[in-house]
Amino acid sequence: MEKSETTHFGYQTVAASEKVRKVAGVFDSVAGKYDLMNDLMSLGVHRLWKRFAVNLTGLRSGDRALDLAGGTGDLTSRMLPLVGPKGWIVLSDINASMLGEGRKRLVDQGIVGNISYVQADAEQLPFPDHAFHCITIGFGLRNVTRKERALKAMYRALKPGGRVIILEFSHPVAPGLKPAYDLYSFAVLPALGQLVTNDAASYRYLAESIRMHPDQETLLQMMEAAGFERCQYFNLSGGIVAVHRGYKF
Amino acid sequence: MLMPAVLAAGLETALRRYLSLDPDAAPQLAALDGAVIAIEPAGLGLTLYLFPGAQGLRVMDRYEGEPTVWIRGTPLALIQQWRGQSVGGAITIEGDAAIGRQFQTLLARLDIDWEEQFSRIIGDVAAHRLSQLWRGFHKLGRQTSATLLRDSGESLQQELRALPSRPAVESFLSAVDTLREDVDRLEARIARLRRLNPS
Image 1 (cartoon, rainbow over the protein chains, first blue to last red):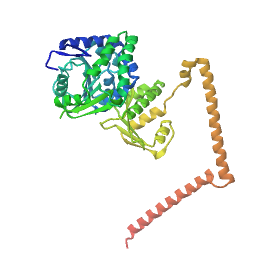
Image 2 (image 1 turned 135 degrees about the vertical axis):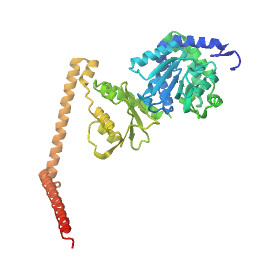
Image 3 (image 1 turned 90 degrees about the vertical axis):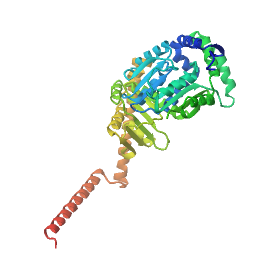
Image 4 (image 1 turned 180 degrees about the horizontal axis):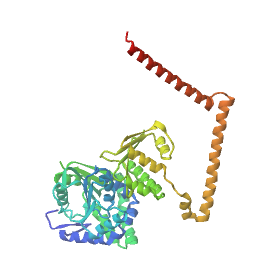
């Protein structure tokens, strides 16, 4: 898939270079109401998923972390107390609207100081080797065009002993959940998107891109191929979401 | 798998809301920035980590670093202490005890103006009436419990003679103290005489 010049954008096949632009379009459109939509779509459960992912980071006082595709800064604001005033967090997103929204939100919460904002492409991280104790990517890997490249870039930027935490929609494993989930994703989500953000297409893309995203085992293998060790995943809410963790040794 | 996270999230929301009701709590929390307070209620198999800071309070159910202070006790003892009641040795504090104490004092001393909070919902006049009513009940309750305590004490001491009176206990305790001091003095005297006359 990566060698060809085409990739998926939801169920469509598009040129690799076009995916970036199309994904940017989606997020530019939803940035302002992103949090509200997350709460509505997941009935607030996304906060628990994020909380669980941050629990797995193992961050401690003085550590450095990179929150990739950090969007509105949910993971960052949860990780900051863990690293404390001596630590440092870089909030990064490829999309300027989302990053701006995140910065605005964190500043409004009074979170300033040991945090930097970097607009960067996850496939080509502008950080030195062995820079972070932990890299998180929450609901972002799905939108990355070349996931293998992004995983390799994360591996490079991690310190030896550091870990990557990937929080992403995945494939339901709980019996009987799939039909209900499909109905919800393809009927309810676009309608909700239309109602709140006046943009059903972006939420149709969300549902489609979740289906096209590699399942739990495939992503685990991709992580191992990128060099991560002791890779493991945790299914949340019956596999609707999974958290993958891998170490660099 | 998400249960501890649910618990931590619930506690965080409750504590944040509770703390936000006292305007003096924010600077006190900010003063504790960087501290990690681990609370381990006995018997629950769960540890909660509290991260106070300028942005308020965060609660996590997992932390792999070393907490600044550990507070352990039965759930009941922990709740009683937060409500400002003395629980004696039922709680142990390990690590930076000063931080632990500062945090406990912060929770125990929260001074919430309930009348003001109610007035935002039901208006000033109604809130004032409600709070007067509440204070009346509270006073009555306090008086009743004090009277009950005094009466039952009197009945046990004076009528049933099951318990000694306070002056009797005090005089007994002071007699014990005098005896102990006398014995100490005697012991010192014997030791001194032995030194003077070793044979």
